[in-house]
Length: 243
Image (cartoon, rainbow, N blue to C red; front, side):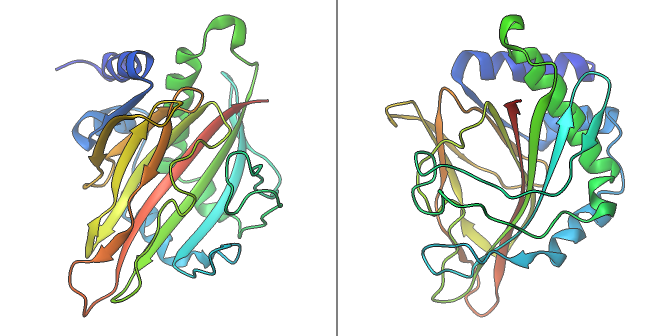
């Protein structure tokens, strides 16, 4: 069995070659546990405490979220004061162009060992993937807790803006929970949006990693497997952008 650092190197090779990687829980789990991930159940339960996203230009109320920013450098990852999330309409034609003030990630989750392990692993991966002349002294990091809800007659849209880039350098989408949900297939396209691959995140810690300068990504709408019960898809999205 490869040590965790070698496992991270294998992921990095895939991203460097293809611009993206689908990383299954069996690959990522040992890396995150070596970085300190623990108390996963409490971390995952925090998705039950998200507020409704009131900035959906399509009028939908199927998305819940919390948001936080961090500064990451080789010495430390520190939380920044709460601030709005902003994307230009070039990257998000549906919801971009305005400052969106979301409820903050709670202090307990911001300091949680699971989140800290994920952020440290992202820093090791993304810093290593960035050529030395372009590598910043510190990264601007954004974390998004997302819950996409689906009910009978009401699909949930993980990416209502369609195939897109986020206007950052690197993106991690990590599955936290998937309850009574069908579909939710992730698609990857090149800069011309020609298809490069597709896959579905099915188990906790299954993840998609993308080079946001090279590829587009999108996720198909989700519907409840059992229409008599609600369903939801919970993910953590982490983005790294050069400060």
